[in-house]
Image (cartoon, rainbow, N blue to C red; front, side, top):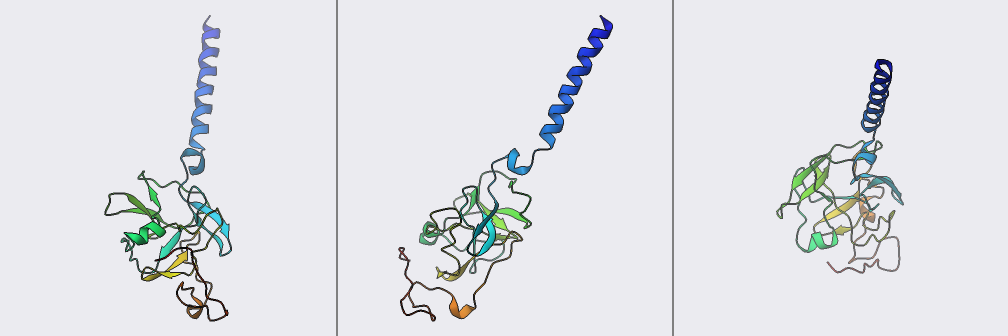
Length: 177
């Protein structure tokens, strides 16, 4: 009986240790919904939200403060989270955090700057907001390191109200700002 009891305790201990080791080895992706990870767009490998929508930084923002509200936030919805810990994939090298918005939601920050999605991006991998000049600033996709991706010279920044200097037809957007 003593040997049998010892074997039962030993097997139970091995089971508990196995479950504990499995739980501790879960990546942030497995441990929680992943509000920030990377995806591939025409601008390269960039940060995206849990639904795969590209994350953008706004040049009018300052570190720790959003300057996009009202109609701006309708077209550029803030990337938000409900938790204090922002789960992310291992390939995200930027420092993630949050700021409190006027409506008391927690907006995700990348290297201190608030990030947003774009209403004009309909599918994962879209980056239709890249380089747009709207709402008093320019919108840039954000790399896995938290760097704003600016692949084009400033003279070629898209603006919905003016034609591109390299095209004969004006660029238009289905959204009025």
